[in-house]
Length: 157
Image 1 (cartoon, rainbow, N blue to C red):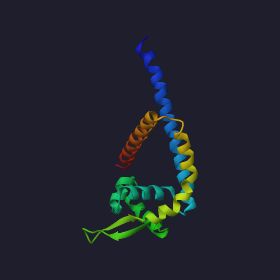
Image 2: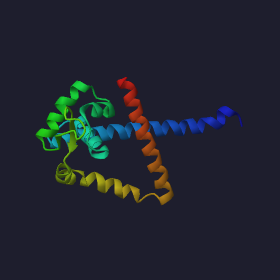
Image 3: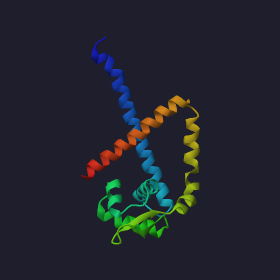
Image 4: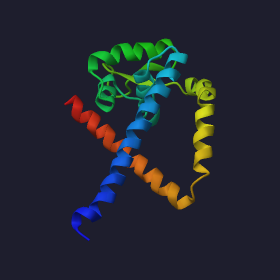
């Protein structure tokens, strides 16, 4: 068997994974756009809020860096999050000239019902896989997300 023949099935499989990833990404953007609209926000607001929730309070500059959003857009974003009670500005404990953007956990609690259908559908899908397969899927998705964030930062540079 030639090298080209042995690589072709793998190349096809890699292309299937990349295409499925694009499809999943589009579905996620559409879901989060609809979810944000239900809450009077835009999708980038919710994604920035997720960064704050996962990584803890941060300055506007840190949020800009982590999200890849332009610093000028962060001011409006934080204003929208504050107006909806999703986040608040608090004094920086180490530097009185700065403020931190802090996540409001009650906002997440109030938003949980909006995720019910998605969580149920994805949990049901997980029932189709054994533990070893789920470990591979979780590992791939975790690494793919990290690489996509790296690519986002590269676009911002």
